[in-house]
Amino acid sequence: MQKRIKEKMTTLVLIIMLIHPKVFTQCRCNFIDTLAKYDAGNNKELEAQLQKSVDLILDRNHCDIRIKVRLTDQVANMAAVCEQNGDKYIYVNPKYYRCARDSLSEFEMLGPLCHEIGHHVLGHPDDKTGSLPYKELDADYYCGYYMHEIGAKKYEALRAIRFLGSDHDRRTHPNKIVRMNSIIAGYNRAKYD
Ligand SMILES: [Zn+2]
Image (cartoon, rainbow, N blue to C red; front, side):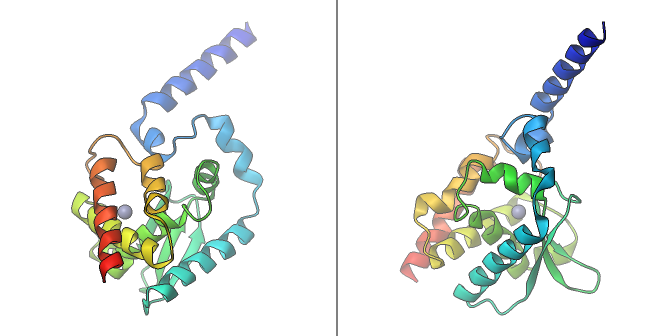
């Protein structure tokens, strides 16, 4: 009896995972047990590594701003956040990051960081209106530009959005084909600058 209830619950959880758009777009690495194993990761080490990556992207692109990385489960995946005192952050959900890292190289994972840096450089978090399609495309353009400047090949700049982006337009984010075109435009701009 208990076994049957357990089986039913598992099926229910799997159905919710499949139909819930937020879960589906956050990460394509499937099921909840896959995510659970990442709880024990060393977050201090990951935070330091991501901070180093952000500093490198800023340095190579001559961006004279300070952006700190914070690992937190307050965000579903990654977000550019401006705190009340004006400090700029990139919030990263460590489970999401490790999940995506299963399918993307460390270098390819710099794409999403470049995108979040783009949001900060454009001042998007300051206007408090949240994610909007035009802002996402602008940040994608910067992502393409920055990825070129740190030596990424075009396919490396596109890999994260190809893997993590949505097939359909959403209220806040355009579909991944449109987003990839924006990354390519930024990448090509850097190439000819
Ligand atoms: Zn964004």
